[in-house]
Length: 457
Image 1 (cartoon, one colour):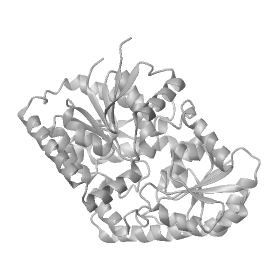
Image 2 (spheres, rainbow, N blue to C red):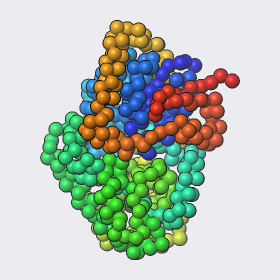
Image 3 (tube, one colour):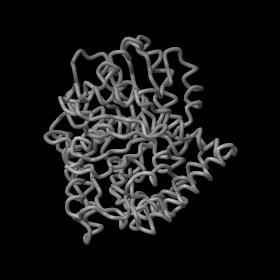
Image 4 (cartoon, rainbow, N blue to C red):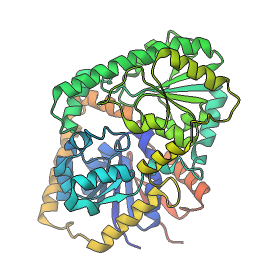
């Protein structure tokens, strides 16, 4: 047992919260004092806590200044890549990995052997830092934890009946702030400097966007007893999909809730280059990769490999008609030996030890091997605390500026408000499912920033 701090920032609530809450519970059970909350708030409050371990969602170029700031406060940085499962392998190191950010990181948790090997081969002198762990998000797809979403999935079926789920992934072309802003954001977070590469990616997504929009009228008419749910990527402009959906009576655009409950409630899931194709495969819901436009550069391997690929509108119609008219519980292509072999190569933690427990074991070993880091009273930390206080004050004064308000609106799309009661309910569900965590208390440190600690009985 120890009493070190672990900081878990959440950027996209619908995607990250449940997985990071499970990790938080496992870490608190092991003796960590865990701080979890909205990324922006947690960063602002970091100087108010003792130094600890900060777990970030990537090691991209945009993280370099943040990691320096965290370490100047006495923290150590560990990370995974939230987007590291669905990758363009030839471009991965250039687009997602910053050598400077990685040099400021003590451990990196890989989704599976394929990602770990890419990193270990590129950074041979640091290969020991790449830990084969899996990801807490995919712990939630395991049979023993799916019950977290079963009630919500049943409510969705009661509300919408039979569901065809379409998960879109066109955040560059259909970005909430426009394609130009998406291009700027990508350039900031990537070391890939080729502007033509980004422009062509936007063009590729534009073609797919219109291809997906074009299937909605046919789906609505052919499957009139279904509700077609369009679920845009968190960074996408929902209003454009609302326009497309408004032309078809039984199409709805919905962003609420976790994607897992929506997949579980669906008869079939349609996607393009999206992690949800992998999630559907692991949940036993047929994933269809609609690929009317193909690209060796911009398409990603794993979601397509674990899905049924169709390459034209006609083949899409035939596939959907055959799939939804069949009485079989699952098509024979859903879980054949080839797909299972591919899945095992890319994803760890789908059986045996939870990814969350594996990560906590490695964090505990890191703390035990290096001892307590004594930065709390150092002159450097005091100076950094003062800087953080000044930055927080500056942000407060900027809240009324139009630029700040637009940024805040975008952040709120990714992270709606979070309350203590919500975390307590999630924690109780995990306790009921696992028989663990009944001695973990959740308290509110400040608005949208919470602490989990083990309590003595």
